[in-house]
Length: 439
Image (cartoon, rainbow, N blue to C red; front, side, top):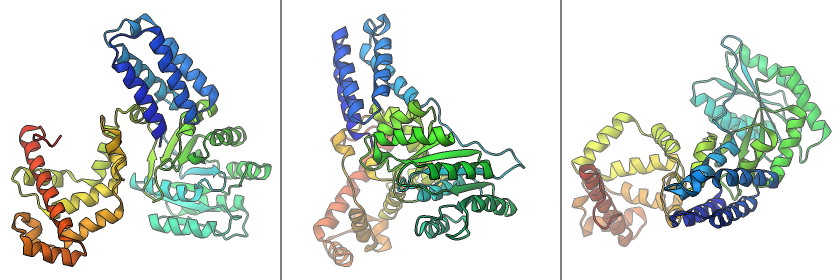
């Protein structure tokens, strides 16, 4: 997501940082590169023109050209304008007043945008936040759509209300909301039908469902891979049903990011959620300020901390720190941390949230097969060997290699890396600095 845009903007702004003072020609050249980078990222042309005009107006003032750190001032302005472009503040769902629920969320979008899966992802996210969500299957046209919703709903552990493929979608929606109310569920997510293109029948059905269930939120689900076309479709949907927010799916793919940067300006409606993977735990709240920070290479520590807090218990973290200080960190501890890191997302996605990480390191991918191989080696050790790796001699390593289907060289490599990592952790714990040669 945003890979090309990130590289170009960081290169352009990095070139400005190398200059002690900035001339108007420097700014013109930088703004030209920024404009080209945004256009290549498939950002709407009108949005690009307005964005660069605003940045130019703010940058040509005396405060920037004569500032002690003019390049940093330019970066600050670009960052602020990117945040404004995507929507200041993080938009949230409107919840029904207490005692007057359930909250109704109507999902709309074209066929193939990932609407049904996104409905289940949203249910999972709301459930994690303490709500009791339910799903209503109103897509009675697409083959297996109801079965798909029933399956993903079961995977996240929520009720799925459906009346089969011959029912009227408007009646199903009203009935589903009443069922959820009777069963004490506080959020109802209505999955509606999509089409391969925007048509009158689709819009008419959405309007009738909206009148029947009076949703507190209408979310437009759009595939970010469709690029600029996504913004055009969003505008048409907004004109017809006046949605409240956007959910961008498939942002983990080859999407150039133009939809995320354009949709707020074009429709006036914010991006509320983004989907960063295929599994049901990959829906996240969209934070414009954090996304702008990532695009400019400044990291996203807040999201990283939130992901870590979901996986790491405070008491367990304290116990792990004590083990590191006393050099008692073993392979069992390493395996536990590795599994938790894996649940936080891909290695490259974690690195992308850290500021100042070189592009070469961010592009490193560790696939599941590699992690499975490491896990097999560790699990082939005895409890004593995992607790005290220093006792591993040649004979033990041969046995571990045979038991894990790996080579002695692979076992040696893992043990060597583990010892280096443990040494580095001890040094960091004692001094707060990395050992020489380990930077």
